[in-house]
Image (cartoon, rainbow, N blue to C red; front, side, top):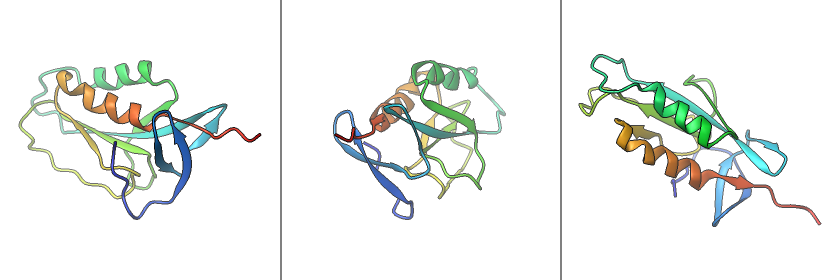
Length: 128
């Protein structure tokens, strides 16, 4: 489970497995919370794979997640940093995400993003 950042506004939601915080700006759609995901790419100086394929796969597996290019002025539920290689020559930090950024450096590391999104999947509490 991803640790929340302390300076972020939250609302309570019910996770499929446990309680987790999610950003207050998330939009309820039916029984699913739309997740706002910021995508930051490295400079692409030496990519070993099609970096966009990570996001394409995540979009197909998580249709309730809205992926957009990272903008420092926008609040996100999660930011994913897509690097093209294992060199880690790219540095990045952000304070506008409810959770710490998830770094993906290869196709084999897609599970990092998948697991983070799966942990964030939530449903709203039905009012009876």
